[in-house]
Length: 160
Image (tube, rainbow, N blue to C red; front, side):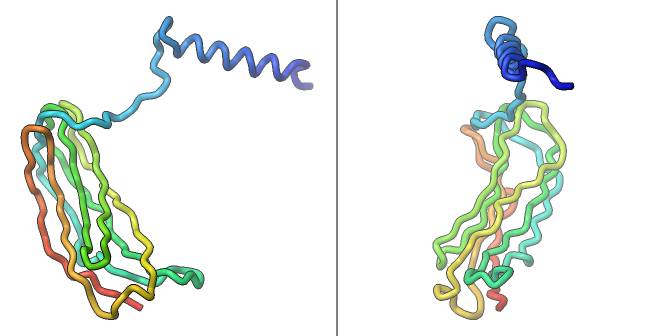
């Protein structure tokens, strides 16, 4: 047998949650990652960017689009001072495409981070067969410094 006044129970639960997580009690209900870059730097010990896997392939299930497929990057950070960011960017200028992912780090953070810029749809009619030139950048950036970890020209093949 359920409660006789479900709307009252739900309203009471919401009210208690708002009071507990509000400014009076101050319980932090959500932990967020920093989103703004600041001064600082990071020490990177290892990077895996499979640039040979960047390619353009047909969409699945009969869709009439192709996709620029960009693999994830794996970056191992040994130490962080301040609030720099890791930036992974893949550009194909001839297609006017630039994909990126970033991670803002905080003082004392370390570990391995996955940066995933995702895929981008491209109209097949706009593609030439063959290949396009692209660039891959992986950087540690802050207001005081910008260190390039990877800067590579790549050939992006069209696989159809």
